[in-house]
Image (cartoon, rainbow, N blue to C red; front, side, top):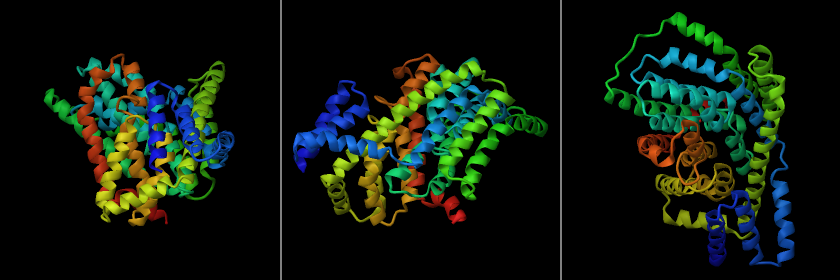
Length: 430
């Protein structure tokens, strides 16, 4: 067992160092490790079968629909309306534009279900605006990168669907509800960092926006925000499943962007569809490869052995959760979120359940933890997307990112050790 685990790590790290796409790193690791304990010929067949079986799930149909909905939302003029609404709500605070950035990312992420879309749509407008107000573009970029992660916690969220699959079918409705409060906590902590920076700059409270202005901007953004009510409300009351809700989100986004707002022309639709297919293909290949590697790990009893080793260290849930968080923080720096959730959920979830930790709560802990990895080098997807949009470099952004990392880690610890923050809303529905 030991040499198989060591070989898996060596192969994976070696291929990652060669910049091989992570899906192929996972598949190659699975093939090499399994070939050490059986004949090579059936290994290829077994890994291929597990890859296709891994994506043969009705639940996963929601992902391409939500991806398409996110692209339509990003092009449909929704970001501008949400930013105007956010300005009317929090623009009068010290660091008002920074607050608008965070709230805009939270609102857009909750509608589009994509952190990358939030960085592109909100960052493309807010980073230049913050720069004009005297903030460095590095600070604006750092804030956008970290605030966009809230879209992975506030539903609809593709990664929570992936966790539901990896955990054996935990309720997607419960996971969606559980993500609201933790996502808002992350946003509030980041706004706290923004306020400290603003006060150091000498900013003061501005003139409070009139209630009439809030109503006006809210009415302009109402149709966009209504999508959340339709999707989440419909799932909660049982009108449709998460997959059906994703399809409805596509129809609603199309009507809003093409017919109502008229921000999307029919000529742009082929490009949007091609981008959707490309992104979906990448995500599904990652899911299939991750499920194949998870099967190999299970076949070799690696999750069971690691679980036993963790439980042997301590029977204190707080200590074990702290260890798991440290491991996931490290994993998140070099592994994309989707494969990390699929690989480490079967390893850590049994440990959490044995210690009496609710699997819904654990899912939120895992996703929030890995959100931090999206903003950290060397593999952080949002980090590289953000510096591209902000027209800066990773080394320059790291310094303003440090206090935001601290804020996110504090939010993670708060959510980890106070389960009701995640479980309060699901308990109401139960």
